[in-house]
Structure formats: C-alpha cells, structure tokens
Length: 461
Image (cartoon, rainbow, N blue to C red; front, side, top):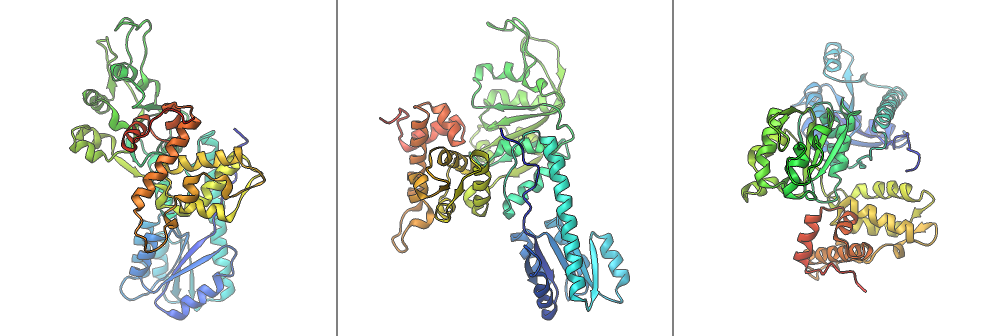
C-alpha cells in the first residue's frame, strides 16, 4: 500500500435558495454563482424545495422566513430530516427577531435581514462554506487516523451520500446491521466503514464468508470447540464469534448459512452467549453483528431458505447499496480513485471515461476496479484510452444500441456478463475461486451464473 492521503476530496458546494419572491431568487443566484465552485438551485415554496432535496444533495440551504403555506421554520425542520448534514441560513425581515431566534434554535447556522447587501450575502455564505470545509476536513482526518487503512466508500451522488450518512449514523450505535446489495457493490467496504466509525474501532473486525465454510464445520468455526470434540479436534478453538471480542463480526452472504444452523445463530445473537461444540459450558460474546447478502432476504424467507426471525434480529438497521448502474455519476470519481491507487502517473481520455459511464457494470464497483487495474497494468502510454478497455466495456454499454432497432438490452447485458466471466476465468487459469474474487462476487454466485450462462469454466486456449 502506498502512503495514505489524509486530505479529503472536497466537493463543490450546492446551494438551495427558497423564497416566494422571484426577484430575491434572481439576486441570490446572481451573487452566489460568482463564488468558486458554487452551484445555485432555487425553489419558490417549501414543497418544491423538499422535492429538490429528495433528488439532489445540498450543502447549504437559504430559506425565507415568511412564505405562503409552509414557513421557513417548518421547512427547516423537514429539510434537515432529509439532509441532516446541510448547513442553513435564514432570510428575514428586520422585525422578525423572535422568529430568527426560533429558527436558530431549530438548527439554522446564520441569518441575514432583507433587503440584504450583495457583499454581505457573499461574505456570509463564503464563511459558512469555509466552516463546513474545515469541519469536513477535521472529521475526515479523525476518521483516517481511526481507519488505519480501511478502504473508503467512494461516491458523491445522492444515492452514495445516503449510504455514507447511514454508515456514519450506524457507526455510533451498537445495533446489528444488515447490508443489502448486488455482488461487487462494496458491502464489506461499507461494513468495515461502519466498524471504523464506531466506538469499538480499535477492537477486531472478523469477516466470515458464509459460502466458503463447509456446512459440517460451520458450527465449530462459529462457536468454537473443545479438544477431542470430533475427529481432528486436537486443540480447543474459541470460535470466530468470541475472537471478535468487543468489535464486529461480519457475516458475508448470510443467507447462505445452512438452515439447520440458523436457529443456533439466532439464539446466540439473542442471548449473547455461545456453547462450543463438545462443551457443556456457555461463554458470552460482545461483538456487534454485521451481515450482508446479495439476495433478496424476503424471497429467501418465502422460499424457506432463511429464517424470518433471524432476518429481523440481524436487520435492526438496514443499509441498501445501489448498483453502480444506478449511480453512474460516481464512475469518474471511482475511476480517478482507482487510477491513483494503481498508477498515479496515468490519466484517462474523455472517450474512455464516456465508455465506462455507458457500461452497465454487472459486477459493479469491483468489476470497475479490476478493469482499471488491468488497464493500468497493460495499457501503453500515459493516457488510458478506448484501446485499453475490454470489449464488453467499449461495445456493451446501454447507449450503444441504435434507436428504433428494438435491441433486447437484457440480452446485451447477459452477453457482456458472459464475456466478463470468460475473461476472469482466463486470467484465473480456470480457477473459479480466483475468478469469483476478480469479479467481486461470491463463489456460489459465480457457480450459479456459470450454469445459467452455460459457461465451461476451463480456461480458453
């Protein structure tokens, strides 16, 4: 690993101004678009403002105190529920002192009286944004020191911000957490970030791949065993749950746990104690339980493969990670992040970046990371171009279909997925375990896709 960057990737500020007077909105926009990196959005009432916040993350809210319908104080409360990390400023008439005090108590960061001076508006907003930048930098530095190498969940899209906000909030409590998302979306990355945000970040983080442990050994691996409990048990083993101490234990692909053992795991989580195989004594364990699955847990419950009571026990807090195709605006940021990780001297052409953004990424972020690593390793020249990208990326994107031809996009996606799997198998020399790792998916998922797509796992000659 290279030296860790302790500078946050600070983003340009997005400002939402809400006022029922069109001339006020125009004046605010005219002043603030001159501030470096500022994007200014406007809304004429509270309902329109809330709709904007649902689809667009904002850093600063400028709210008129007196508006028809929803007033500024009511809007402030509802807006901060949607965007709890946003700063806010109130615009008020000179006789609204008592209301301004009420707004400040409700969470407003500052206020400005109308009519306002343009320079005063610009200075006040610039100061608020600078305070925000310093606050984010300090938080980032503290987290970086705690992480000690934990990979960040990279993204600035509204969907990514929702995940990051939940990660930070969930890290402050010790509740069990269920993380949902397709293969390769970064479920373990999110789990490790939750752990690093928590009060017990210095304690162990124990990851358990539920698809990799033999059903016959699962109980002893999880709960431990005493010497002589079964053939080959030459030493006592405390088990993975106890080895996590007061930290976190992460069950990756939790729905793959054998049904016969799910009842024992449920009881262990409820009672916070375990009984090693071959022992009559119980032992307590203090670790927080994190779990993840790429399946729909309710479908697994309906199919009789997963216990409903276990689902509710581990899913006190649920974090859903969207697939990469639903947050394409994060792809340039992810690509730059992976390029810096692999070869900071490289750049990427605009044409190559557009191709990356058009592709559907069935393997999600892990697939993107693998392609960037491959391009950095095999590419010629300082700039990565279309010639450095694999065929599925340059020819398999959803925008490639000529209009009016009625192309079956699901068939195109399946072809791209087949090509990606074949290339991974070839790179892995036919090893399905290594190919699954390259693709960012569990081995059971890869086996299922091999059968669905009719792929022979032997390496191509």
